[in-house]
Every structure is written in structure tokens, then in C-alpha cells.
Amino acid sequence: DQVFGLGISLSGNFLLTLTPRLPFSGLILIGTPLKFRYERAYRAAYHVLRAVGKQYQRKWYVDHLDAAIRAQRPTYDRFPLACAPECLTAVEWSKSALSDVRSPVLILQSTTDHAVDARTITAFRRNLASADITVQWFPNRYHVLVIDHGAETVFRSITKFIHTRARVSSPRVSTSPLFPQPAEALPS
Image 1 (tube, rainbow, N blue to C red):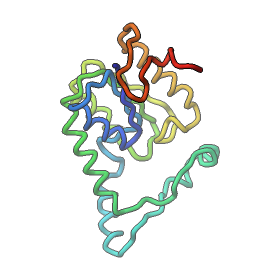
Image 2 (cartoon, rainbow, N blue to C red):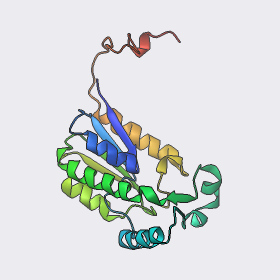
Image 3 (spheres, rainbow, N blue to C red):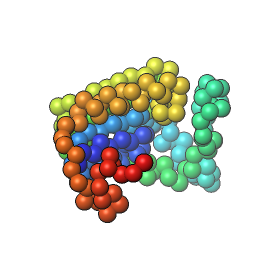
């Protein structure tokens, strides 16, 4: 079986930590951080906010997003501060797994991402063990590219990546108890 893993934002970091255990045919990382924009300022603000007893912080960038995007996408307007250290831990874990990634990697990134520092791409290129790394930039988009305007372009890039890297093989009988026969043999 061929499995392509796809991770959006921090789920991309968790996906990277699975690569030593799972033989992915390819990875698709969308807005996955190795470094956050304004990370030092956020770290300092975190300690101040927690010291004064705050549990949540209002997201400052929500008001600056394109009105059409804000109207169409689900969001939460506050960030739970208690989970911030765990987010940074997840990023550090994923950094340690980069040298284990040998499968093809597609990195999709917005040029105007409010969260991910552009230096993340350089770090991916320098530290991934894969010989097949494709980076595609999307101008004037939000952090979560798959729900922003032009999402169809993102999905076309993902589809093309999978189709060009998937090994062609004949269908075989599944050993999964959930799908005991090939999908094309299932009744419609």
C-alpha cells in the first residue's frame, strides 16, 4: 500500500515525527512551522500574560484578514495560552525527525503567513534527508491554504504531487477488515 501523509500547520509537525515509524510514499506539509514569526516576542508576551493570570489571548490578526476569508472560514478568536509550550515542543520534536525523512516532500506555504517564519523553508531544505523536495509558494493567502481563496490551486498541486510520485501497481486484494476487497469492486 502507498500512503501519502498530509499535515496542515502543527499537524505537519506531528506527521514528521511519525516518519521513522511509517513508510510514507510522500509527505505534504501545508504551513508547517519550524520557526514562528515574531517567536521571541511571543515567548516574552506568553510569560507576561501567564504571570497576570490570563488563560486565553485574543488573536490580533483576525481583524486584518480579508473580509471574504473571515466570512467563509471557521475560526476561533482566542488562543488558549496553556497549550503554547506544547506547540513549541511539537515543533522541536519534528525538527529532530527531519533527518529521517527520505520520501518525497511537497511543502506548500503562503507568502503572507501570519504564523510561520519564511526561514522555515530554508530549514526544511537544509535538514530533510529527502532528495525530492518541492516547495510551492502561494501569494497573499492565509496560513491554512486549503480553506483560503484559490484552494482549488492548492488541491491541484497536491493531486499532481501524488500522481507523479505514486508507484503504478496492479490492484490487489486488501487485507483490511474494514475494506476486505478493492475499492473498485465495492458496490456503488
